[in-house]
Length: 151
Image 1 (spheres, rainbow, N blue to C red):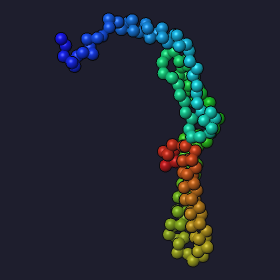
Image 2 (cartoon, one colour):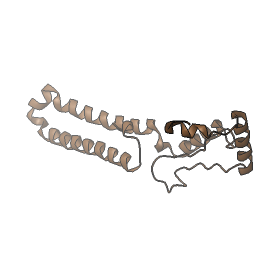
Image 3 (cartoon, rainbow, N blue to C red):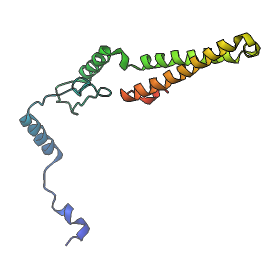
Image 4 (cartoon, one colour):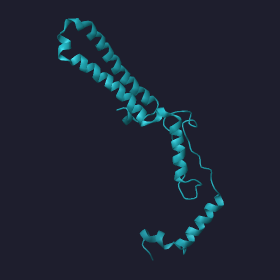
């Protein structure tokens, strides 16, 4: 008599691994080829990033090249969905901020009384540029852009 812990092992059938593999192959053939769907922004109602669901396995009917091509086509359709686009927009705003701050922090600028009106204008521009940066980050969040692209 076997101990209780090994009772499950005593009931193992005599099938070999090769027989199991053959049965699985036949089962997959009986199912037939399944349609592979690639979900993108248009099929999801335009929300967030592109999502692709591809079933695993060699008999799925597609290969990695087809999936990559579909992803590239989806990205080519919308240039605003690229890392470079968002980085460039952010860099432009940050450059504007740094240029304005450099003008405001210039030693001779703040001591000249004639620059009072210009200083006020630059401070408004700086506030607007910082607001633009916050708006860019909020827009990216709404569109489902990865946070690292605009950080």
